[in-house]
Length: 435
Image (cartoon, rainbow, N blue to C red):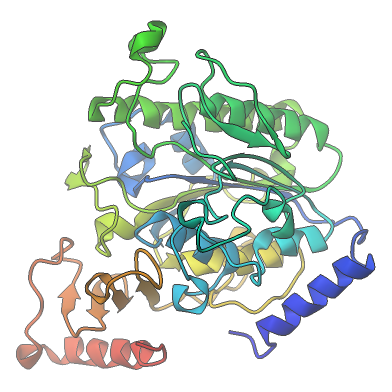
């Protein structure tokens, strides 16, 4: 992290807002930013990453015309990933309980808002503490998204539960969206985004879109044959996962079309990723074999997510990067796009997008306790990895290049000289973090 205390940065931001001194900064000169993060969506779901089970023509075209990052590492579950990507911090610094984001945190929404961007969040929230109402007295505060820098919002699971798909329960800028049997949650979100792009086309904006797709329950979409009969809309079957992936692609296509219609493609950085691996009940075919989803596991199947970035006119078509990117890197990347510098655990990969000097990260680090402070120790995981090797805090050492499923720990008493050196390097990095 930077030498500037993060708490000091938060205090300065808060004082500026209270005093009104930072509410009208100069209009930023940087591009618009749209960050799309799909729920429960491993890299194997996208054709551009070798996926063969699903139709993703829009995403494949974005990858062909933009930048494909083949080794993006997330956390294995929803809230851990969301805190890491939004704040740029490792989970041991700020993750307390599942489904909660502490109000003393700075998000990329705060940073881009302070830089003068119009800001908006659409999709899944689940950060008010609605799952632990007795623990968090402000769980029903509808203004928490605005506290974290998002002026507008259209969200599932802000202060109410309910369905995210058929007959959805969605809160839009403080009011419940009227629902009915023909409404589909992802359509409500996509409609809001298309309208937002139209309304903000003449001013720089940052739109964060954590999708509700493709999280269970696995059900039909409006493009599924079964949707025609309202009685079928709450069916649950893993067979519908294929339709849900196709609908992700469809809604990304709606966003791309809206940008194109308003002449914003070349002035918008569109980032696409997933929050964690695919659910374990989903088995997908790829050009390098069959993959069972690993959501909830710290293995490659649980943490390897797609990352595609589109910025026509700046990013050269067909660009690719096979080095490591981790979720703490998004926060400093977005801050740099906005011309800001804020302490984080990550490393900005913005230089890659503008073909500038970039120092690749040699390792990624993960601290993971599924339910935060209430999680039992037997589910605690810490590891440091390179692309090919991985060392857990408990001492197991894997050669990922030949053992992706982590079934065969390397015997530490018979390592090659090169492997022993890698082990020492990983141990030094691991020792930098509290156990």
